Each structure stands twice: as C-alpha cells, then as structure tokens.
Image (tube, rainbow, N blue to C red; front, side, top):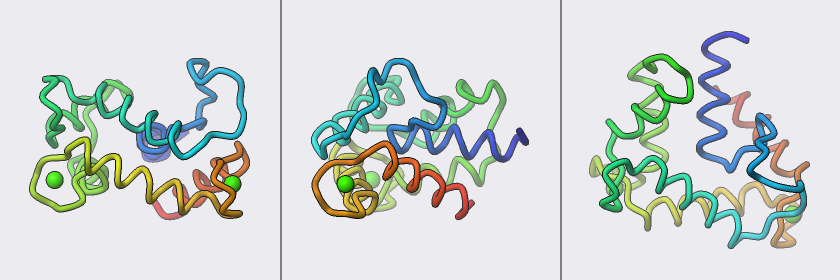
Length: 133
Ligand SMILES: [Ca+2]
Ligand SMILES: [Ca+2]
C-alpha cells in the first residue's frame, strides 16, 4: 500500500467511523443509527483533543495522523483533514462543528434514507472518499 493510500485510509478511518481496517473495537458489524454515528465521531474527536479543552487544533490533528501513520503527515493532508473538521475555518474544530459535520456525512452516506447505515453504505462512502483523493 502506498503511503498516500495509507494516509487516505487513516484519514477515512478517523473521519468516518471507519470500518476501513475492520477495527475490532466496533463489535459486530450491523446497521448504525445516526446517533451512534455522531457519538462515534465525538468519541474520535475526544481522542484527538489531546488537551481535553473541547477544541481540536490543526496541531492536534497532525499529531493524531502522525500517530496512526507512524510518520509525519504532509501539511496539505493535515490541512485537508482539518478543514473538514473546522467547518467555519476559524482554526479551531469544536465538538459542535464535528457533530454537525458527522450528521451531514451520515445523511450523505445513508443513500436509502432509512436512518441507519449498513456496512455496505459505509463501504460505498469509503470507496467514494478514496476516489476523491
Ligand atoms: Ca471552527
Ligand atoms: Ca441506510
């Protein structure tokens, strides 16, 4: 796997609740509700929020990617990821922003609009994300 692809996968995993690497912590794969999806996004936010102040900075995002990749990410990758979290562009990603972004992402992934995400819907979203890289 190329470094670029690995980075994209790490990014997708962090952002999307990612079944990209079939994480064991997820438990049995089943449909995920909107609430669960947002809760998972907030849990990942809490992991990134190293200082625990409810705000994630670009540096914290960079550190988190570095930890997952085992290498320093390229600045443009950090920028891309951070811009997804910091939706109003003030340089700080807040819980509210992450919650809103996760909700919007859920709605985009829930292609049949039945309020749950099947593993297939999530996988399709992940493939779409890789294509956009
Ligand atoms: Ca912000
Ligand atoms: Ca669905």
